Image (cartoon, rainbow, N blue to C red; front, side):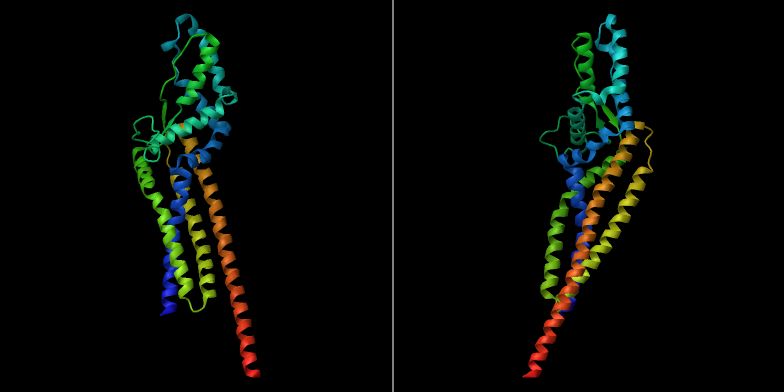
Length: 290
């Protein structure tokens, strides 16, 4: 009976871990604002994405709408230059980070409800208003004409159906912590109930290796599925492609950690078995000699 309980607890613990670990990763790196910014921040350094993003931001500015006619011709060369030098401006890093934060609040309103600045969008969007504000300041400084930056400048990076998936992820990802606690309890119960505890260690280690392989296959499949959907928007497609690559790389670190943990458990189980066998043999020899 103890063997059955131990085996069932190991299986339950591994099943809960299979769901909880990806859920926790998604919550920490995508649903939570700081994690999302940390994950997506390097995209602002990608040369091709920089150029496309700058062009999109520049294209959203209408010089004729807020600048007197005599200055309109002076502004266009400034805009053209900004399209190639936006990322070299001193305020670009802060503007890019604020772009990510504003975009996250639009796409994950529940996680940023206290600081949300606008109504949530019906599709996945990137709000580049901070970058447009940076360009607007450059124009104002060059022409001495005060200009007001827009509160929002939205670029669609996904479809409504994908937005629905994001809403579901945002709702269910935090449950991963409770599932992880359940997994830990189940594995602890397995260790307590086992007649041969080394088998629990080895079995859990082997299960961890299997989970790592499953997560790797699932991550690759998800990346291919997302990458295979083209939106027709060059900025959106580059952002999506780079974000998926960054996500796969960071989740890959968790997979490697799981492989290492699994290997450690297997080695610990083997050592425990050898030591226990040596102790049992010595005890038996002492008893026979008496």
